[in-house]
Length: 56
Image (cartoon, rainbow, N blue to C red; front, top):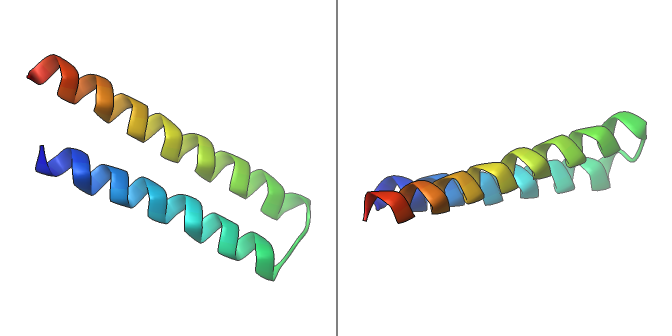
């Protein structure tokens, strides 16, 4: 259960980091970065939710 919380915090941090980076410098590369980071973050959260569901 602890690892799930850590990964969710990490994912949210990743998304926030990408958004902050985007607000500082708004260009095409930043848009792609925000999209990729958000997708990775969402994937990690979903993956952990499924994983923890099957472990219980």
